[in-house]
Length: 156
Image (cartoon, rainbow, N blue to C red):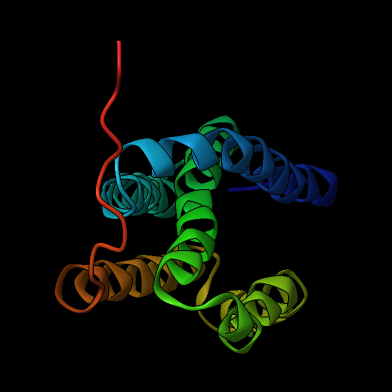
C-alpha cells in the first residue's frame, strides 16, 4: 500500500483518540454486566479488526479497522483497573498498578518495535504479531482470569 507519512500518522493518532472515547463509555458497562463479558467483547473486536488491518488493501479500510481496534483495545485498559480494585485491598492497588507503567510506556516503545518489524518483514507482520498477542490474551482470560464482579441487577 503506497501512502504518505502524514496518512500513517493520522491512522495512529485516530487510534488513540477513539480508544480514549470508548474507554470513557466502557466504565459503566463493566460495572453493570460484570468484568469478563466486556473484556471478551473487546478482545474479539480487537482480534477481528487486527485481522482486517493485516489483510486490507486500502488506506481507508485500514483507518476503519484501526477505529475498530481502538474500540476493542480499551476494554482491557478499563476492565484491568476494575478487576484490580475488585480483587485487591486499596493499600495493595499501587503494587498491582505497575501494569499502568506498561500501558503508559507502550505508545513510546511500540512504534520503534513496529518500525523494526516493518523494516525486516513488512507492515502486515506488525498486525500478525498483534493477532498472536491477542489470541494469547484471550486464552489467558478464559483459563486464568476469575470473574471479579458479578453483574449488577438492573432495577426498573
